[in-house]
Length: 185
Length: 185
Image (cartoon, rainbow over all chains, first blue to last red; front, side, top):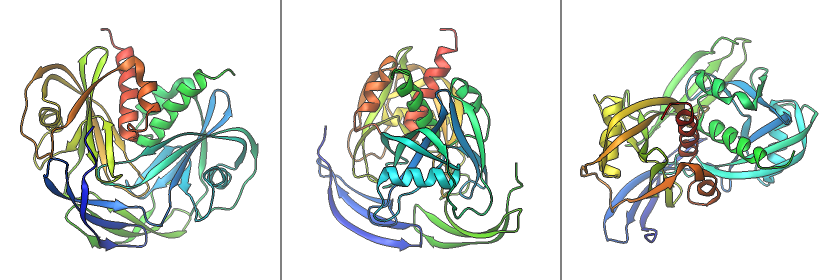
């Protein structure tokens, strides 16, 4: 594998409350140079969690929430930002309580995934949540989030519908199904 | 399902050659108002394609390429932007020839997926490419892209390694495996 390119120049060219755009000049190991733009993570150390809450061995809980990026309601796994100083698993349990109304006695880190690695610095940690119990924390959502139980043996129907399109949720559901099929239940 | 919120205000707050950041004020059907930021698609109508090139019924071709967003080499499916006026399947075949050195006699649209629907407008079309033949087009890559054949019955090992992390590639590989398992071969 080639060596990572050298960063010759890196600067912030635009910033908002949520985003920071950086320009980069890179020199590759073959001496070729290229300019890139990327979106850096907003806050230092800030990451995101995506939770796979299993109500029982066969049923996952999805949430239907308005997605401002694409401008429509999306059926997806619950997710949210890790707050400053917060542990990953604690962030997952907090988001689960805020968005879905459950806590989890067991939380397992399945994988860290990237979103668009060529231009986004962001990573998302996938957390499997099992042994659920009812507990709700107040969130900052503008309206109540609809929770939709879905059978894990029927993912094909979920993905054939137009309202579950998010790459992270699709990847996490398949990874969970693989993981659960290889664990004694 | 709730009605889509009304957009009370929308403006561009920062722009670079690759990104356009918009702020939105939305009013939900329960009269709650919230401010959002989202990343709009750069060029009008501009989308992206992600190609699943099948060398044979069991072997997919991955590419190992430097990813400037996360700052390391990533093993993923080939992908790229749809150019102005270009058809989706033509864009997929062009990117395949540029990045992997193959063209495809058969191109099928599997699904349109979103990346981070709460703050990115972007969608990516997943294109299954079969009946490959050797043909290379010059691309604008700074260095030769390493092409890595991978067996579809060994995705678990691919995802357990640290260098294949992209949610879109993971989702597309699983969706392809499901699709191929339900098609007569």
